[in-house]
Image (cartoon, rainbow, N blue to C red):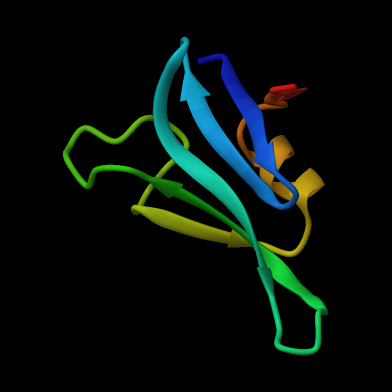
Length: 79
């Protein structure tokens, strides 16, 4: 399944699957501005969930970890 992350703003991406928006990948930041991780989240909690999602949201330490988990998703800027 070819995933694409389409950048919306710094730390925010639409998650596309075969060209359709199915979720988002966003950065969590503390009040002090420190990055606390990344979250990949589906828009809907309706079965069947696309692989590799086992639940609606998953947390990652880095964007690179999320991209790898999504099977090496293509990351593009929407400029």
